[in-house]
Length: 366
Ligand code: SF4
Image (cartoon, rainbow, N blue to C red; front, top):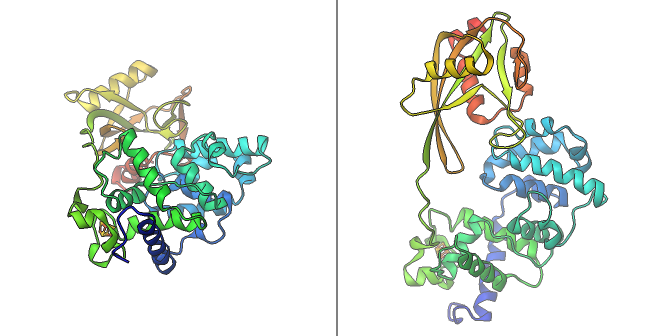
């Protein structure tokens, strides 16, 4: 019914009807859509924050076979949870899952609360995630608009506000509420996200879109300008130097990060921040000697990689070193090669180690 007045109730009802019909015919088979248990919905929503759907699928299956219930997650060691999370990044999410599981077991009888307000008070569950869990797990009349859903709404309603601003966020939530049907909140929330992922994505498929004649941005020719977003500031560069340190007993030196800050509690190569103009090898040796009093001998292996963390782009220079066997105190610990798989390491450091282990120097020294 293309003649419905845009933004009228009949227009909204038609948009919702078509969205739900599209979802019914096109929803992807995803492991967390089999049973819709609150625990699975919660874990999937946390994993999906900042991570693409297809990447999450394998992690989700592995996580569920390792921690099939909220109780098993609560009773696990944090290190085991971090290990299962390794490679997904943003490890604070895993820590909050673990913390929340323990809290739910201790104070909520091992159950997730059903309403958005209570969910929002739990560690790691923000406003959007609470809305999504309440709708998808409990069929509550709430909305949880992720980046995909946001794109769809900004285009359907031709929203010219900056969607990162607080007024833009309020608008988007209002639009979502205007489309939310009285029943089927679960399907509606997922339909919005799925539609934004498959049809109304960064790459627009307007020609195949069942909402085309209802879409205001399409009518105004502004679809490629929506959503309006403040240009994200350029990432700032930081430089660091790290060492793959091996001793005569074919052990590797790692250190455990403090409980707070970047990669809290994870195991990493020893690493120091440096200036752009510093020589990475000299800088590493002198900072390591200052911290431990020990002298390193450079080996003939080095690598470099870049990774980003929040607003930082980090240029990491890595060198292999030999260190005479010795006893070192925390945070340093020696590990045999067979121990490495069991340790939670952030992706950039795991990548460096994989490069080293497959190198000639790595094979002969470790
Ligand atoms: S017509 Fe294009 S911009 Fe509008 S909802 Fe469909 S895919 Fe998105």
